[in-house]
Length: 349
Ligand SMILES: NC(=O)C1=CN([C@@H]2O[C@H](COP(=O)(O)OP(=O)(O)OC[C@H]3O[C@@H](n4cnc5c(N)ncnc54)[C@H](O)[C@@H]3O)[C@@H](O)[C@H]2O)C=CC1
Ligand SMILES: O=C(CO)COP(=O)(O)O
Image (tube, rainbow, N blue to C red; front, side):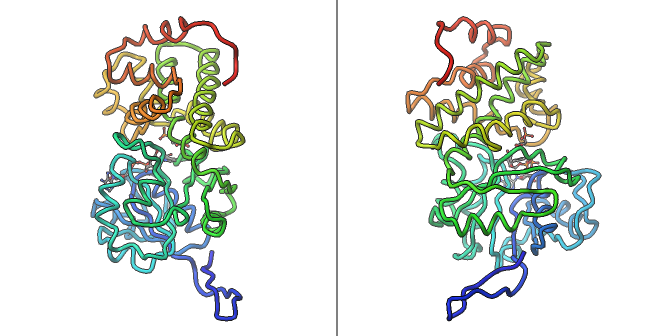
């Protein structure tokens, strides 16, 4: 992957590998660094832990977040934000959604004004109800056209093992979107581009809440009929919210929508699914968070998505039930009863 710069004659010339800086050394940040390194980019990482950064640079491993995976030797990591971000063409954000605004605000002075920012995060900010691309643009002071999102059926561990998958790269500026898609194209990772940023981001955030619901059902011992019902009606909920916010109907049955729902709701690798299962088995929220490890974004997003839906008058019964179980003491046994007892209606949106 090389950077192309316009020359004075208006043509482009290939000069050097594209420089990408990943913010966050968690499971997905590290895996996406591998994806971009395998696509030919020059990849640096920034993280808070000097121990993790040293291990990435020196031993080519991240045993805390991606145990057993060997990283390409050219990936380096540092806690020094200025060094990590100097000259970056792409700034890839992979930290928990609720920490994004504060963290990016402190890093802003080091981000080159011409950089394209890439959000890998799947959440909606509490209190503001902002999507992550909006948070990134506001915190870094970048125009919306310079922010691109990546979202799809992308369980980190499988991709770190170079198992084939596809994703969606969404942005409002076709050039920036294509640049990010090229930066992550390699023999096992295939991005599709999409101009529907709103739809792609909502799919990524809300599928985590639906995966918690599926996990709860499975933790209760319910089978595949229940799982299929929650996934399918979950997609209806996501679509309803997205349409109210102007998203394209075509996005929801695609990779970022149905694709990611299938991966996240089915896989024991998913933190959201796992957390839900623990809740269904009777753990408290605190116990389930501790037992799951890693970031289960759907916990906080159940509240922010519900806030957003209410502000728009959109009905999201599964999301509402998950938030009620996690935060309002609704008993798990009551959850299914409450969902099934709702008034009869026609299928569809
Ligand atoms: N793990 C996965 O398979 C996928 C995750 N995502 C999304 O990517 C985002 C990041 O997820 P993961 O890397 O998996 O999470 P993780 O839990 O593995 O790692 C999060 C990382 O962020 C760091 N961090 C936490 N608070 C921070 C702060 N205030 N400032 C700087 N760093 C901070 C942690 O130390 C850790 O290194 C989430 O929004 C998640 O939904 C998206 C696709 C796949
Ligand atoms: O987003 C993901 C897969 O696409 C990862 O899901 P979890 O955050 O639930 O692990």
